[in-house]
Image (tube, rainbow, N blue to C red; front, side, top):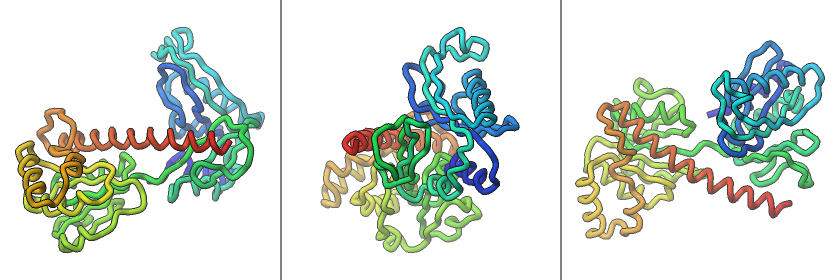
Amino acid sequence: MIDIVFQALADAARADEPVTLGVITGVKGSSPQKVGAKALFHGDGRILGTLGGGCLEAEIQHRAVEALRTGEPSTFDLVLDHDFGWDDGLICGGKVFGVILPNAQRYGAGFWSTLAERQASLTWGVRGDLSVAGPGPAGTVASSGNDWLYRETITPPCALWIAGAGHIAQAVAPLAWQLDFDVSVFDDRPALANHDYFPATVSLNVGPWQTLCSLPLPDKPSFGLIVTRGHRHDALVLKDWIHKPFLFLGMIGSSRKARTIHDHFLEEKIATAEELERVACPVGIPIRSRSVPEIAVSILAQFIEKRAELVDEARKCAAANLELAG
């Protein structure tokens, strides 16, 4: 999925349209948005993205439009107390820091398109003089020094492989794409694994399971979901996928099914106990889901949680690397 704010910046650069980029660079305490939240402000009042809404965003929008007039970048440091946010309900009590960058389109369509397309892990940032630098390889930026107000590493969307093209997959796949997963569906039934049932943004792979299971994972963080048409096919896919380096692997089914497959895989030495522990079955968080859409929500809620854990770990590693790079 293309990052819409970066893409809009690229479009503004091509049209030579003046726009202001606002970025939250830090928070203390409770706030309506987190570090890295972005919004693009146009001179006619249009806003793309959000920095939290309400009076907070209204205040930043006022400053952003004024910055377009003067051409002067600035920082902001706003306390979300009852005096600031009572009318709009923003009484979080936290503090929000950020930057306002007028004429951000001047860095060029190529600059922002590279970040929007997210083909590789790249770092960009805002220097102490409020200039923008990057993108460069992950953990760095294309300039020297350590005078940074903000640095961010942009990564490609995580892959989500779904084995099975039935009703569960048909509900999960489009929602997963909206939630920023790069979705691929696998099935041996061309009557189901086609774009009559899946949006064009979902990659479809059709063929014998033996061939499908032999495909290598992409070179990026990957998640797996097994929802084929029955226990036998689920076990067939799991037999191979359990040995692939998925960051998280879930399978539809009951606790009884999980125990049966667990015992069979151990007895036949198909997988180790440690490998089986990595498989979430039944997959999904317990929200008493019954309908197919509810099941899809429960599954993706679990995947979002696992992805967030991964992102947190990656950010810690990136921050450590940036500190070492100085």
